[in-house]
Amino acid sequence: MGTLEIDGHRYLDGRASNPNELGWMRGSPPPADKCITFESDAFLDFPQLRWSLSHMRELVPTVNVWRGAGRPMLLERSDKTADIDALTFADTNGLVRRFDDALYDTYTDGIVVLHRGRIVYERYFGALKPHLPHALHSVTKSYAGTLAAALVHEGVLDESKELAHYLPELRGSAFEDATLRQVMDMQTGLDYSEDYTDKHSSFWTHARACGWRPRPAGYEGPQTLCDYLCTMRKKGAHGESRNYKTVNTDALAWVMTRVTGRSFEQLLHERIWAPLGCEEDGYVFVDPAGTAMAGAGLSATARDLARFGELMRREGEWNGKQLIPASFVADVQSGGGPSKGYEGTQGYEYRGQWWLTHDELGAFLGRGMHGQLLYVAPKADMVVARLASHPIPSSNGNIPITLPMMLKLGRTLSA
Image (cartoon, rainbow, N blue to C red; front, side, top):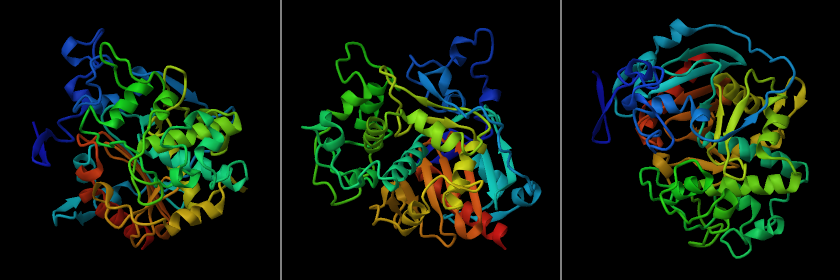
């Protein structure tokens, strides 16, 4: 079987790790060695995650994001599959690759490319199908940040207010004197480790409180997401630097739901899914109290993710209506200061829960672990929604291929 070496470790490659070929969850019932369960705590291990990320609803509690009662607004097509598959580019290590081969080398499960709003390329691999939602992980943050910005624009929220103004429960926690703007831009000083490879890191403690990972025997930690947020302690001062921490987005969503009286999933339905005419429902992981995990919990189809990117490319306008303030999209593109090189993205900036690249296409990104990507490139009139199940949680494993790949695609489509 084919393998790839990544960060000094060898993994089955994108073809050899196809979950259909490996037989995960096949049979009635599946054989014990091919069964993926939540209780095993191995569902996010490789290669099991190549099945899991397309089937999260079968593993953890979720709540629906309704697409609405209207008919879907189907995207027009202008197929360029053959031309795009044949594109070649050099990755950051100088290795020349074909576009179609690079999809396997980044463990792509599904990809949709829009050019000027039309689908020019769409492919699916392994366990994913066009109608199946796939875990977006931290791309969820970009949805949350966009919703929050709309509420600030409408005067429902005040970005200068401290979180305890909205959530008295957070008095005594690290969030007490953090402003909404600092939370939106990841400028908080929190004692929280965003280390995906360490199952004892704060990120996974957070996940266990949310019910996203199994709790060990005798667990006496926080029982809900909100309980966990109240335990946060300071490490440094707010506003001094950018520290990418998922817990910020969950705090932001708690503020939104408290002030509006609408849950995160209701806000997604009312302000994004239904107005965009999405084709399928999405869903979000929920904790034992039914609270959605807005920092990493959303699943959506590739086409519906691409619709969200197209909304941002069109500066918040859709079908003649301004769904998102154009000023917010401009603010994201203006950037908000160096990101300190988080996960190999030296020179990137972070604003409103979006990454700004400063590349020649003017691209800004939503990104999630294991290779999730929403790449919005205004100067190329291009949006790319890429869903993946890469063995490396951080972006380090795919960025050397992904970023040159996106640049070549954007240059070609805009030529």
